[in-house]
Image 1 (cartoon, helix red, strand yellow):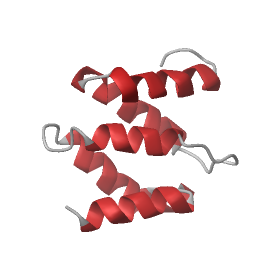
Image 2 (cartoon, rainbow, N blue to C red; image 1 turned 90 degrees about the vertical axis):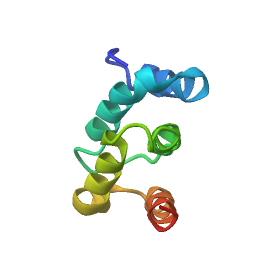
Image 3 (cartoon, rainbow, N blue to C red; image 1 turned 180 degrees about the vertical axis):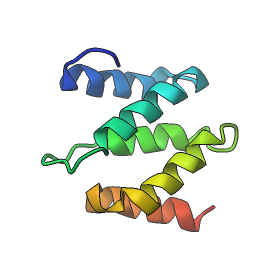
Image 4 (tube, rainbow, N blue to C red; image 1 turned 135 degrees about the vertical axis):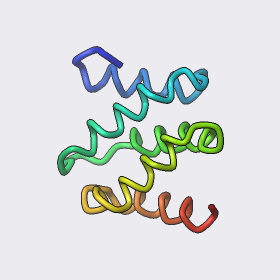
Amino acid sequence: MKDRSVDVKAYALLGIAKHGDASAIQPVIKRVKTMLKRKRQIQSDEILVAFRFLNRYRHSDKTIPELFDWIITKRWDVLFDEEQQWLNEYRTSH
């Protein structure tokens, strides 16, 4: 996740989602925050992949619900429709 290439980071995130464990939570959270710092021009599945990965550990790591709450309250306007939909479903099911 430290590589400068956006493509490398996206592939790393896919690998983490498929094979990662709780040790990857903080790097994934950091990546999500970085991606949401500004309005994105190109829609990708990267944030949704991160959301799904983090959702697996939401009960064991309190920083995950805090991140989702921060996104909902402070960064909602930079999310694409599909990302907003995922967070709405997350919010109503918890």
